[in-house]
Image (cartoon, rainbow, N blue to C red; front, top):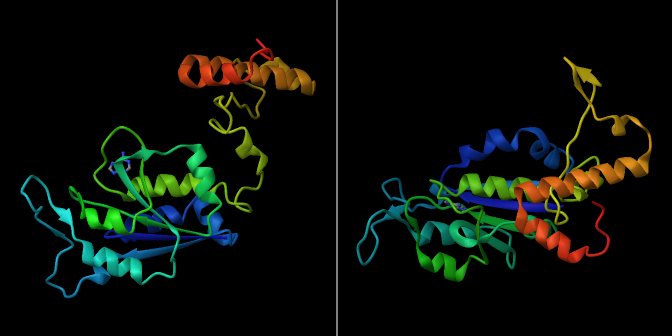
Length: 235
Ligand code: ADE
């Protein structure tokens, strides 16, 4: 069981999404527990604000540290990894998702405005993570993206755990094409090999497709794959 705590000024971001599809199944199957912590509950009074002007000047508002410290201290999550989604963090990938899926507890702190007081990052945050080289208006969407990719790796969430093993990025190859019924639609046919029943041939075909797609879309991954599989190339 993985317990996830999400500290956010906008809890409503999460409710509809956590209530759908695999994310919903992950808590129905008792594999992941989600706790959403509303930062506004940690303001000293109704007139207080979550943000303030930056010391030293500059554009944009900064999230204040007291509500975040108080929200964090209210959690039963000492020594847990604390993730701050930010475009200036290290790049998220499948290896990080795998590593985080093995934790017992994870805390996400969702930022807004121009940023958060650096003391939160220095004192509480253990992992500053970006989901890509572009800037979003909030930390909720990147937190949800990371949570989705982490929770599906927690044992008990996926019916077919093996399917996670052939995902793109689980090896250095991208995933290959998939087909289902009908065998033919308006002249569009499923490749014959998939209907042949010959498992070895199907496996070879799939590997070849994965290699070709990786070469076409991600030369960086293909080079990595090639250097690890020298001599065994099946092309
Ligand atoms: N917050 C804003 N943009 C982001 C990004 N690209 N990754 C993670 N957090 C973010």
